[in-house]
Image (cartoon, rainbow, N blue to C red):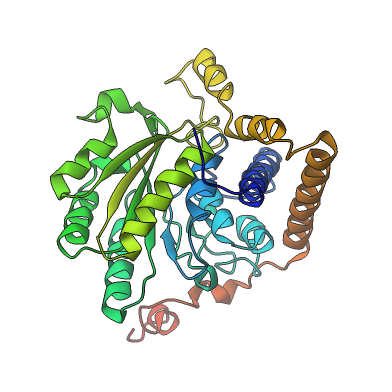
Length: 333
């Protein structure tokens, strides 16, 4: 589709998508080597959604993310070194090694937190949006969620509140066709998630989520509407995750042919073709960009590996439940 993106903006989109892909590909390798504890949920194949939306956000805008949030927070400006350290369970990570892949937050760049609870970001986004409105700023909030989350109760409560209060929120549905292991065609009452916007008197848009330029254009419209005080938008981006719901998922719910077909719509390859046609991306520049990104990711891994683990007593720090340590000894919390 036609895009208003300038050449440097298109190149920035390409770099962001390549960076997300490289980070998650490395995480995939490290997890398979038993170097990363816990669960990881990868968004390989979905890079255009996070890159396109974040490209029209300001540093002081907010996002809430999901359990599949590496791309969201990287695109918003989070530090890959602290992200990798968190995945390794190290003290230098965003949650001091106690949160892991699903709970990365960085308030300095507007990342209010990834969330392991499906649809858990909705109430947070409404609170942030209400804060923006009461303080009289023109900040906006992006609430990322998946097609599976769209069927949960907090989604509808949040959209209703955002609509009646005209809060500056973009509800960004990353529709990868599967709620964990259940196909959207089985679990969802409407063929498009964006149709649900009608029930809350807000615009509903569906775009090709593998076309980063289309995502950017749709997001720009929604952000402009939010900044001007007109209220929320539901933006649905149709995409596909190449990996399973989690690393190790046997994926019996879909065929290898279906995955291969999705890979043919690779959002990075697609943008690269556009950039080559415009003579913005030569083979030499592509190699240089890939080399720079790989070096950045390797540095993140080195930082994580060399960082210390938290001490055992640190497990009870940063809690909001009184003196838990004293309670554990039999005292009052």
